[in-house]
Length: 390
Ligand SMILES: NC(=O)c1ccc[n+]([C@@H]2O[C@H](COP(=O)([O-])OP(=O)(O)OC[C@H]3O[C@@H](n4cnc5c(N)ncnc54)[C@H](O)[C@@H]3O)[C@@H](O)[C@H]2O)c1
Ligand SMILES: [Zn+2]
Image 1 (cartoon, rainbow, N blue to C red):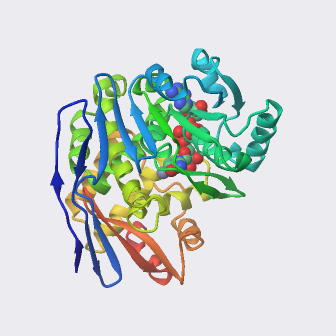
Image 2 (image 1 turned 30 degrees about the vertical axis):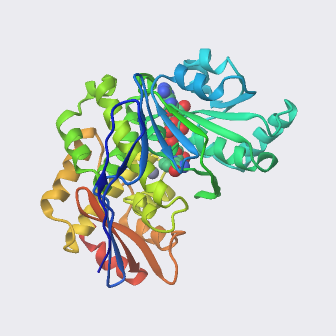
């Protein structure tokens, strides 16, 4: 049954807000929700000479352009406290030093309530109050922690991000999910709250280590499989090691990914429906991350994307040609697609996944490049459906 389709496109000249309504097709068939996002809906996109601004829910702006211009736009004449990590402070001290700042450590191991409590204590020590603007400058770890601190300290301060890693630019900083890990469980405690602004400047990527660039590309490929075949093709045709320093190529990749994510969040801020498609590849990725720390998040996502494509193919949902294109692109980027831990361990972790309810696990399956569906899979069927991965 087709629930909804709509398509209106209205384009006005540069410099003026133009809104895009795209298609959203939702079909419900035997318990599965089919989600096909041909391209975004209802985005407010403003192009200016040096930057592009995308707004979410009319309360959050994603500014893609020069960091100096972004900070001038959002952080002038305010008391600003910056939260960042030691790498960013070392590489971009000239930006950090302009503001009062708190430096945290790095790595997934510090994304926890101990770090949060230390930041609360420092904010109290310097007399931060409800008029203070918190700005997280860094990768996804800094932005997740800053968002969590900002939404809980004194019941909520205004906050924004300067996203410096590719993963943060295309994914972590966009969408208003803030949180920290508890024990071995990722993002177990958190809030939904949109940052007032996100500043994304692709020139930060010039200092990002190759492994982190690849990690970000894992999420970009995910976005392309979810809803943008053009972007997938663009990466197939244009990506090489040299392109990471090519501003035009990276700007296109970042903008297309952000636009798609912003659009999905705009429709479903609190992940009650369509936003769940963003978990493509993540059920397997999170299970891998629980079993081993050898892979970073983007590397685990790449393995997850490949494996779930194989599962979708074996279930007759995804054509072999598309499955091979996905594997080839991920390998071209430089990912190893081998399961880094025994499959049985991954399946065991999936059974404990926080998204399972009534013995059903919600799983996102690609049906072609640019479209996927969400299915509720009985826990008992996982072994059978994952048989093809042995
Ligand atoms: N909130 C969300 O919706 C969401 C979505 C996806 C991922 N995440 C979270 O994001 C985190 C991963 O983010 P990440 O990959 O950015 O990790 P990260 O924040 O650890 O950054 C990776 C490394 O790169 C360094 N770095 C960042 N920018 C740099 C630059 N421009 N130059 C040189 N070094 C730089 C950092 O110091 C760090 O060592 C995970 O905790 C994940 O759960 C959150
Ligand atoms: Zn992710």
